[in-house]
Image 1: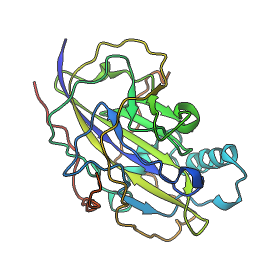
Image 2: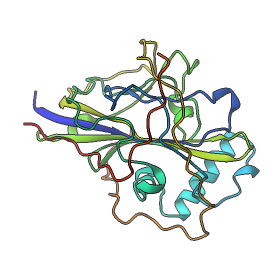
Image 3: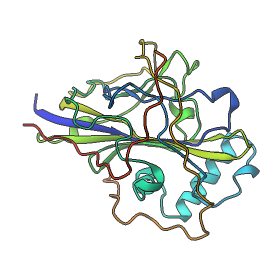
Length: 273
């Protein structure tokens, strides 16, 4: 087996408040396992207003919600590319690594071509997984695709994820999730999650038909991070200039609330031979 160092930078964006019954549906990537700077946390790093200009309160149901997002993302130059949007401004969307430790010891990636969330994905919205600059998974509605029958006790398994593009010198895996929910005011907000994790070797790819798992989950704190309020974005969206485009690949216990990470922190994998 070729030895690699895969540092997984998990960036999860969530728009919270749309589904009241799902208000506690936070989480982080469980497998490959993330390590945190201090206590394990499943919380968002930044909470902001939607940055794609649209009448978000006019939608009638989840199908219309996803369709509106897809339409506006395409107009703004972010079609099928959450990373391009969320990496465009770390002052707005949060630090690259969130609460996780990019210098933690790398971990072995799964051998079955999957990535597992710490609980069921309980908000509608798009998600992506990248290995360095190669997108290996994208879906416009990850609750629809990977949600479970009980998001509190059954973990979501995202697939297929082909880890073979990770080079022998190492790679970084990033997970982006833009999940839609509404706030107490009745308006949508975006919650940003940016964890990171490490791996050591290229996995031998296998097949898996499982979409749910009931493994026990490490204790996570649910106290929210600092809220950042922004005004509604202007009609003209400015696409990112330095975020990479996707490389085409087949997409088949009670704890104190952690401090919000600095937006200037970089999430870079340590390369190990």
